[in-house]
Image (tube, rainbow, N blue to C red; front, side, top):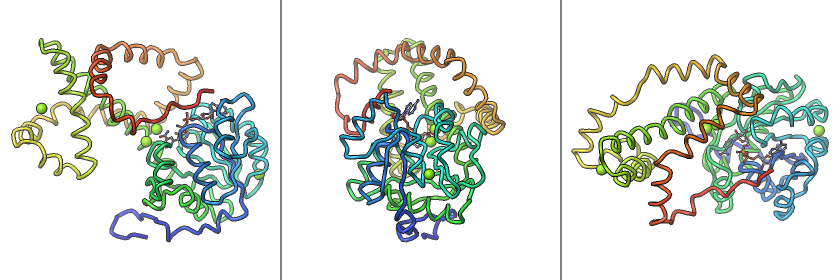
Length: 340
Ligand code: NAD
Ligand code: MG
Ligand code: MG
Ligand code: MG
Ligand code: MG
């Protein structure tokens, strides 16, 4: 344990690999997280079976990677730990097929808390319910592991039926390489609410709208789309890299004093903190979750409309054209997921 943090950060020496000895892990799904967890567990000497539907095209990939494949129900039947790594929106229906195979003392594990936190999956009381969530996409979870490194991660215990749920989750985090980088304990509620808030207000929603608003403001004022693209989108990566590597001061120290003064005095004018609080309220009250669940039940009409508008935004066409000119950086791209 490393104590200089306010939250405990667990590392390799805190995990007992014996927790997974003689256990079989069923990894359900072979997408971004699934392929990485399954291969890392296998390389760590853990007995793994991948659970996929007979029609799944991911079956061939898993077999090519040297893994055993079974249906989700058969995989869960032989497993002690069942890991839900299918998309969050299909987890409730996959859960229906594996629930009869959960024996007392088994573990049902997640990489995101949405379905448990919002009551879409209600596991029986005699199984452990845990979460191990790498803070990174699957291809990095796999690639860093192969290099002897790891991706930082979170773990949480929602329900401890055996008294060993926490130790087992840590051992799992070790087997997929996360304790090499450091693992933090959280709760299903905290992980779910912070994840949804972050992706809506800052990471996915906030940043794309910031870029589009900046781009549109310049183009509407008569500046060229190419200049607007470079200024508002392309340069964002350079700024985010500095923030990521060394925090706010590293970024402010690296830009000109003019940029620093202008940014410090004007930046907060563009962020609406009341709107952010309203987004957090919608997450905490379950309003967003209810909206997204019924959107899925209705076959995603609004989702399709928003995606269509995003695809047809002028910045996409300008960006495609300009990125052709400097088409490197392929290494950091997530491989296209296997389609089901
Ligand atoms: P994904 O979409 O990449 O992969 C899902 C896989 O599930 C598919 O490749 C397929 O093998 C299988 N699948 C799809 N539909 C199915 C169905 N109807 N029935 C059975 N199997 C089906 O998913 P992902 O991004 O790896 O997400 C898995 C979990 O990990 C989610 O809970 C997600 O929130 C969580 N998570 C993802 C990331 C990430 O960066 N991708 C990071 C942390 C946590
Ligand atoms: Mg079982
Ligand atoms: Mg997240
Ligand atoms: Mg998320
Ligand atoms: Mg500039």
